[in-house]
Figure 1: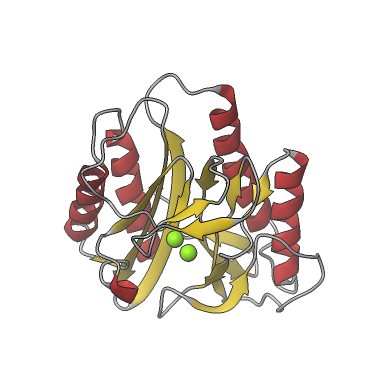
Figure 2: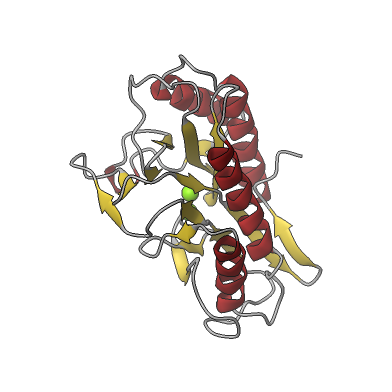
Length: 238
Ligand code: MG
Ligand code: MG
């Protein structure tokens, strides 16, 4: 899982290095596919539940599960890329959001910063004998303090021999509740946050999840191992 995590992190480094206005989301997907294959891994999302691409790429009001296409990225677009890799049957799951180009407005920059930092607050709770609710609560409180909202209908999850395993890891919850975290568990924590209401809807393509009110969204995700020494982020490019 460490290897699978490293490979997907390197792939997203390549994707975000290439991100600039004028590139299509299909071109970004192609970069992810080539990098994962060059590193000797398999893309985890391609064909999973019938998904047609290597990465989910979601722009602006799209939260998750956007399908790469010939759509061109514009200056100031919020671009969320979610991707996974498989090595020897073990999965990784990783997502980041960034603003394309040089002219990000302050709200978009703040949304990205809060999403990234909320994930770090969740990860900090990944120690043996904490509970899933400690992660949820840490993420939720940080995002609420920043006056943003959090997705309810989609959650983080266990990850290992499959992309999606037990337990669910919600982004909203109460400290001290939920499944116990134990040494050796591997989970994906993935705050999906928005500037407006938490309600979502799915577009007619059957995949793309958007904010119901059209507000902007950001998504960050790491695959994390719970060890006796504390959390280890497996989706690391280092
Ligand atoms: Mg993911
Ligand atoms: Mg995930």
